[in-house]
Structure formats: C-alpha cells, structure tokens
Image (cartoon, rainbow, N blue to C red; front, side, top):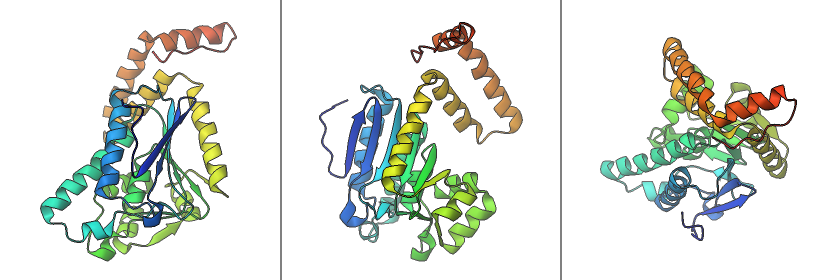
Length: 267
C-alpha cells in the first residue's frame, strides 16, 4: 500500500492500529460521486489485500455535522445512460462489499443524513452507531430510481422484509430513534464526539479478544446470512473445528486455565 497516498474526497487516519475513513465532500453533503467511490475502492482494496497498518478495526464517518453521506451525486447521475448506470452501480456495490468483507470490525458512525447510497454504505458496515440528529432513508423512488448499491438486499436483512418494503416503496426518512427501534442502528449518541469516542472504545474492546477469532466469526456470520439454518450450522461447525488449529485458541484456553490475560497473535 502507498501509505503516502493523498485522496481528494476522503481522509484516512490510523491511530494505534485503528483506522478512520472520513467521507470528505462537505459542500456536497458528502454525496457519492465516481471519484469518491473510486478512491474508497482503492483504499479498501489495499486494506483488504495488503494492510501494512495491521488494522484492528475501522470507523467510517462523514465530514461535518450535516451528513454522513446524503446520497449519490444526483447531478452526476442525471445524464447517465443505462450502461453508465450499470458501471456506477457496480462500483458502488463493489465498495459496499469491500466494507462488508474487510477482515476487521467496521463501525459506521452516522451523523446527519444517511440517505440513498449513504444508507447503503452504512449498512455495509458490521453495525451502525448514530447521533440523535441522524436521518436514514432510501428515497430513490422519489427520483424514479431504485437503490443500486445494495439497499434492496441489505435493508430487508436488517429490519425485515415488510419494514424494508415500506421504507423503499414510500421513500420516507426515519430518524435515529426509529432506526434504533427497527434494528437498523444499534446505539445512539447525543453528539458526534461522543459517538466517535464510544466507537473507538468498542473497537478496542473487540481488539482485546482474539483477532483471528473475530475475523472468523465475521466471515461465518456474513456467509451464513443467506443459508438455511442447516447449511449455516454446517458452516459454523467446519470453522469451529478449524479454529482449534490456531495459535490464538491455544493461547486463549491456556491463559484461562492459568488465570492470566491472554497474549493473542492473530493467528
């Protein structure tokens, strides 16, 4: 990875092996355009394939207080042909899958608007924290569109099919408290500062456990979501047995029996 890479539309910082990606188009309410998605794809691909930072967790948030990501850039989309839209949709989906399959825990910290593509990117994280002023929605039908970065698929898995259909068909927005009740958001906070502070605490709590076990648990849960219970149990059993060959498993069990803190290596 080029650690000196400078991006135009995102900021990336690492502190004690914990990364923060900040979507940085505040004058456009952090709307997703081709340049921004391309930069996210480049960064996330590097982190997935060649993570020289040895990240233990990742936060993604939006610059400023008005928006996490207010949606896709409508001005850029308005003149797209079906072929252009296919390429744009593929790019957005690729980025969402990179967030979803990154080996470390990813927390979306949503401040302000998370609409359309913004809601879709947040849903690609492992879970969502939100400020009390956060607003979520998939309003694409109001523009004659449908969600294109995974919204029709992930939203139903998070809030249930009927809730997802009601939100997507009506295009209505939901505030943080309703998003919390639905299960779209797992925690809410009074301020962005409080949210980011708590998100970092959560990542550090996860990192105190076996990084290898957390990675495998994430993999099994992501892959199992589309399987039957019987198929998912088989997947879990295979990974449960395989993890007994890991150094972390031996260290964790020995440390427990010896009544000491474990020293995990992530292997």
